[in-house]
Length: 141
Image (tube, rainbow, N blue to C red):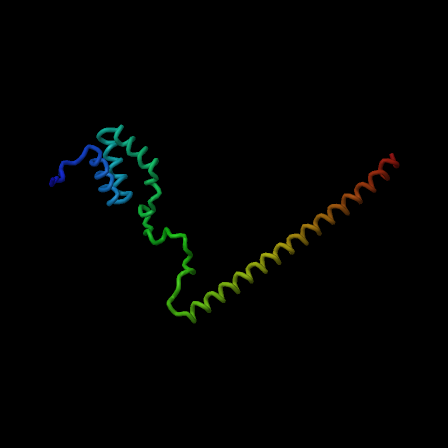
């Protein structure tokens, strides 16, 4: 038996088609639909705000001028240039810079620790002088 497909849209496919159509325009399309919804029928605008919030459509960074390429979590230093010698040099240089940064941060920590110890020792000496001077002052009274 040969069945022909029905071309009448199903009741649930119309919202999906509208969603896909708005997605094709990105965040600008959703925001325009939301503004139009608020202007003509405010509950429709409110419903679009709720839908955009619940489906994380606000998170699309293309609205802010960033392309989808910029959203990747990869560092630009992870890319290869195609030249293996340069890539090896780059990896070696980055490793050396990371080691130097770690050594410098360690040096700064030791320097801060020494300064803190010096300030603490000066405080304790000053406190000891004040404590030893107080009994002499009390005896003189």
